[in-house]
Image (cartoon, rainbow, N blue to C red):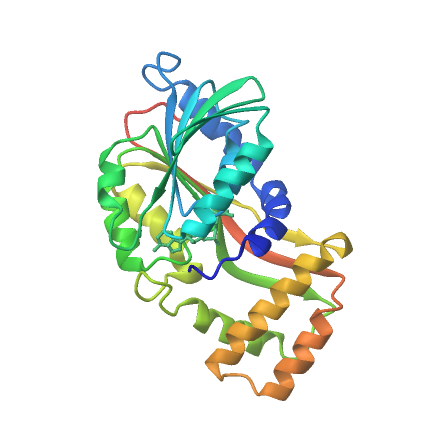
Length: 286
Ligand SMILES: C[S@@+](CC[C@H](N)C(=O)[O-])C[C@H]1O[C@@H](n2cnc3c(N)ncnc32)[C@H](O)[C@@H]1O
């Protein structure tokens, strides 16, 4: 349904996990450890666009104490995949209807799975005022207008990682790199279900809107740095990019084929992302 296959998400998961900025992640842990009432009840976390559950697998082991996650996606196949992969990852699993309770790394984690189209139906989720709203690799898909509405309504600590920032460098380079990147950015800002997507401009918009509301906002780069050990991901990446560029018609097909042929043999590739942490005013920032 969403166009994000479980194969693609599984391929990127280890790279996503190692690319996150660990200092910002530790800052998040400190902020949540110092929240009012910490330890008295499980930490409540909302994960937007959860895919197959990668964000939970990266973050739950870092966050303090007992946790209650709500995983949201509009793709039922990905929600099923997230349930299955989280159960396989846990050391102990208890199923209670739709809810999973797992033990992992000495933590008790309760997980609910929610099918929602975030383009239309995100406000009640934010109104439930979780301790943390989080997302991974989502915000470049949403529109600027959606980001504005989101920023005006979020009241919780907000942590989003791996938002594409538009920077790409392939080794060896190809003469069409700049043209292909320009066309890819044009494709990035087409409608991904939320209206014209914010694409690489998403993080700056989030930062500005949240800062204007008094949040303390920190950014950290989280680039994918891919080498020969990541060849399957590099190949899937350049094949996917070439497909998107082809749809724009902005690069002649012969040039694009040459670009793809070169980059399928790449020895290194760097893709830029941002991680962002925003803490509401009045909360200690770690
Ligand atoms: C790039 S994937 C990231 C998945 C996951 N967060 C990860 O890091 O592996 C984007 C996710 O957003 C979800 N998504 C896209 N549009 C959505 C919408 N309108 N409502 C809910 N989920 C959406 C997709 O189904 C997909 O799971």
